[in-house]
Image 1 (cartoon, rainbow, N blue to C red):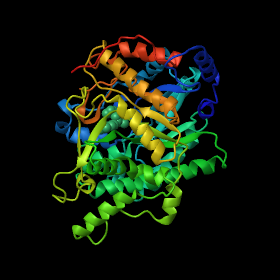
Image 2: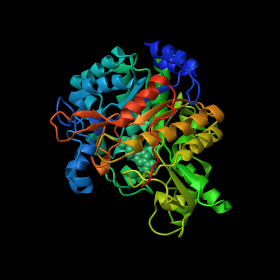
Image 3: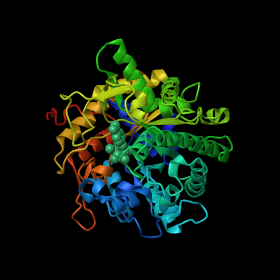
Image 4: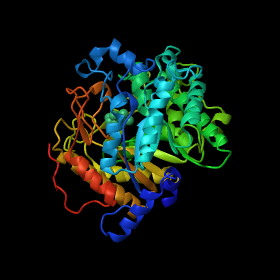
Length: 504
Ligand code: PNW
């Protein structure tokens, strides 16, 4: 376990050894020595400064400006939590929490205003350099997401992720990132949640506002996989084959529980897991590589049935399959909630779509405790199940939980959040200690309240509350911040914290 983070925190072995010593003294619900705790944010959701210091326009700038009516209360990320100016304050919060790492994303159009690498915005580079230096000075490891949904608009004008050339443009961008930050940054995440941004961006409500989950979403996924494989290969080549840092991808996955114990429901739940997670995980993490067989089978059959001359799910070439297979040092997992799966009511209805191809009805139990997000219900046991399913399906890969959290309303007294964190961490501990899942770190989403995409600022995930009325977006610690800080500092779950039970 220790080896994993030794690489990432090579510049600072201090937290690693101190905490390992601490754990040895404690008993009870404790994480293994070397297990790391962090928090996360993403550029568009916190930075603001959308058009200053040379930053170019990205798809979320364009989308929220052109379609304000689609976003909660016409809100946008123009200012957000103003982290572009408040970054020192943010590092102060991280210090206060005592976390081992900070996962943040780099805004592509802040580094490359047009998306292309012919023009580098030095002010943008300096912003992240300063942030990284300050993190290091405080012994906090930077974990960098290269792409958290904010594609430069000029690249979207060329078709965005549906354009095969995007894989090469992403490779060029990654080259600039490695040239500037490789060294101090020892842990890279190529993409955050391709399922979300391909499905919801090209087939749903998110930017850029595509409406064809049965075509564009698959093209997006295809090019993202190709891009990921290329960047992994580049990183390894740059390192001359010696692994000095770690690189992986972050996939989002809810647990899908069969609605009943029937064979049909079990099969439907597994199909949903393969469509939602296997779409990206099978090509990268399985021994065979390529898309999951069930996805290939269902989409090919549907496409034939719909009279298309070829499948709507494109084919990876043998070279691409080889290049993508095994392209990871770790799996980043974003997990929040659980769903129930059963066969869809009316298969073969309507337009080609991801949902129609999958053919699974996804629901949640009304009595599962709710958050402030319609999709997020509190089901901690699902966390342990998804970790075990990944272990079994993909040969027990090394995992870092790169996001987990809950949205609530405003206010700093947030016992529901404390309870969420506690219950999910208990499930995680069981997965690690009892089931031997290889999980090395946990990241709470999010450090601070931020722009929650189409839900604007109405859903708050932060350990720190952000006052959007104040000019410098004052941050105030919530109860959950002190709770999480206690865990990060002791590596153990406190015996008696608030003992609050979640009710609706
Ligand atoms: C993540 N789901 O998205 C994103 O990475 C963050 O940017 C976002 O703020 C956070 O979760 C909270 O929403 C998800 O439906 C969106 O299961 C939806 C789901 C999971 C993650």
